Image (tube, rainbow over all chains, first blue to last red; front, side):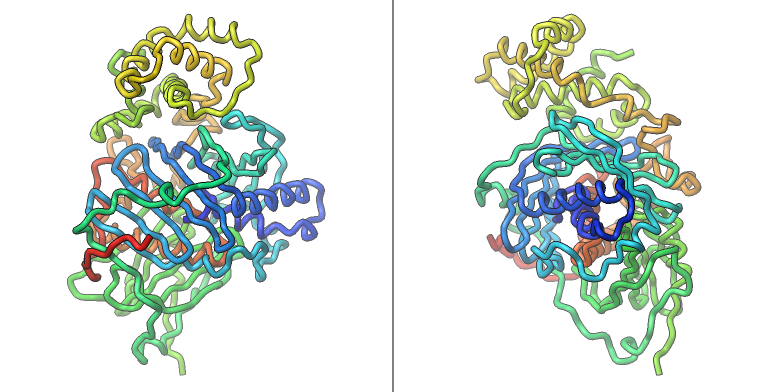
Length: 330
Length: 207
């Protein structure tokens, strides 16, 4: 798992915001703090309990993060509701689901990118075109003095953030996901956090995995059948600022056939498009769905099912899903 | 009005002892009653203090705040005390309670219940994307914790997608950990159904 909550968002945010790219003082200040936060999330050991509030629900979770040169190891445990865990190490993400006696494993793509600090392909000016950055002053969270930075979306196709950053350690202590009109749709906030010098292995190993559990493991990347590989996917229309940033074939955990996976991003928010060949008798998503603030939209296109997911407003995934085209390549 | 049963439930939630079947109902009450958010914050801090999990605190105005808190929170402390004594029988209850109250008082109840209110206040947590709410609301509760409106097979597939999306996005320096929060915090009483395809060996944990 990435640094918790939008614990990776920070990575992204901070990395994206190259101070020199901003002209104004406010943006420079925001970039300074976000860069500090980026470094803190990668280099600090931390253990903490936080609340996660969305819609009418409230959950309590605990996170343990051990920093190292390979990208760190993190463990996230639900303290309320069903027992669930996510452990992310250098190689994989392991979702442990005791109530269904199963373990789901995905490769950790980000591992190769750690500990690289600044992404290569990000255009900070483009980000500023889609988001407005503000320095909102100071506050206190879990007895820690914090700096508040806001990143407001300029349109309805993406969410923004308010981030409370520990003034001393630069750790992200609270994150609010906000809409264009300023409404908070989700909040993650530490109620306690500490920074141990060392985190033992035992703190990062699940005790929940039992004999007899079903293991669902993501396969290696695979090639599509020739006819399928010749199909070119693209989107006729995208929300402002979104561009294609990935197009590849993958075999996901639990899927019988390789899947075409495209990622569109505005530099901060990202949306994935998964295209699979329709299989008789298999249930597929048709229309909208949502989990927390993650939106999804599915539709059928020819003999393919397209599913679009992302932590963006519902209209964004629907627009992209409806815009997808399939064209044979020469 | 906060009943004893409700106090018990909030206290149990803070101690991770609330039965799963009561979570949803209590979450609805959180949305409707401002005081619950404050109360939960107090109980949580009390619990953390009794577990000695709180950071060092500033002790300015310590006595005044303790007295004020004691006046207002006697009932809360009594209930919480009972539960925590069960759980932490080695704790010297009297001292711990005093310490907890002090912590709560000094921290000034940073967990601001008003920020958890529903409806129209600008700072509240509201379901996103109003135009789509109608199809998502069931009995006044937005079903946000699992993929709504779909059979388990589709939900499992969507969860797989979002895990993969999150990892890819991370690699691209985009997006965060949040989808894992959704999976970890899936709707109480609802099981995550893993996709049925793959191998089923009893693979040992690699670590």
